[in-house]
Amino acid sequence: MLNAPDRLRDFPSLADRAYLNTAAEGIPSLEVRAALLRYFSDHERGMDGRDAHFDELTAVKLLVGRLYGLTAEEIAVCSCTSEAFNLAALALRLKPGDEVVINDLDFPAGATPWLHPESRATVRLWKSRAGALHVEDLVPLLGPKTRLVSTSLVSFFNGFTIPLRQVVETVRRHSQALLAVDVTQALGRIPLDLDGVDFIVSSTHKWILATHGGGLVGVPKARAADWHVPAGGWFNLHDAFGPNRFDRAESLLGAPGFAVGMPNFPAIYAIRAALDYLLEVGVEAIDLHARPLVLHCLEEVARLPVELLTPRNEDSIAGILAFRHPDAERIYKHLHANSIHVMHHAGRVRVAIHGYNTAEDVERFLRALHEALGAA
Ligand SMILES: Cc1ncc(COP(=O)(O)O)c(C=O)c1O
Image (cartoon, rainbow, N blue to C red):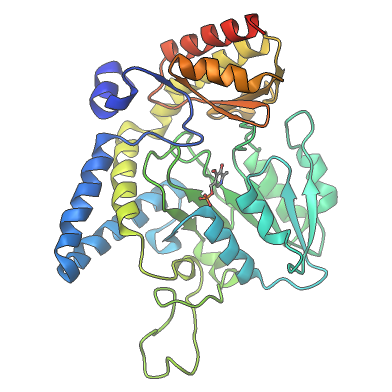
């Protein structure tokens, strides 16, 4: 992944383009393709394939546990981050007067379960300033009524990376709230220290380079009783097929309560292969390779006549940077016509740099961006 021969062998589709859009869709390696074919062969065996399916799930839980700093028993796989947050909202059993803190750099999945008129909690918004979330602005939002603080580790919007250690300490000092952290834009790209987080979730189609269809949930055992999801299903239940099954349903505590039905095995095979791959390359090695590219790109973009949305603070950078420009759509089209893939939405252009990107990808992007702006 980190050098040209490996990159072209494992990600042949990257050969002719500068792919800077992993924050939207990661490019899976050929190992993932092989895993999906293996799933097919196992599934062709019918019920006899199930042991193999469940072996893959066991392996995924171990691998995710390594990345989250948890044990396999503290991990579950559901179908997406949004599903995990909705189940988390059920588990909280919020009452009128309870408060939930969200922030304005967050992806909707972690912010919206509490914004429905039916939700009984009061939502308090932690507002960013100049693209950054400041811990001192969180303090006045916390108190005895705060039940949950929900945030992404790395913002999908501008790549701002929260100072997690400070956030954990602040939430603990000023409230009894649980802290939920969405690591979708971080997992596989930067090394994680999630100690003190009460609920962790990630999607699987971005930086870990797997497929769609996974939500990787982590709940530390010490917090399992706080996350008792009252959902129907069977995989999440104690004794779903026992003699009293039509009298009452009792779900499992903690992470296992987030996997309600038959696991999405195709995704699980892909996730296992993708995580094996990433861990072999090493997330630290990926960050060492990609971080200088992000910092260089940020410095160069900051010189241009665009509105930079990403704060220029090295400590709050992961793999994403973003800027705004009135001609974002034309810029995007120019880049795309030159086989440079970035994200654009509502006047914002977002660049994402992973281990399979190169200095040449960044130079190509900067050259084409100069051209597009020169023509503005
Ligand atoms: C931070 C973050 N969380 C979650 C998601 C996706 O959520 P889901 O898995 O529910 O589609 C995204 C991106 O699309 C994201 O950027």
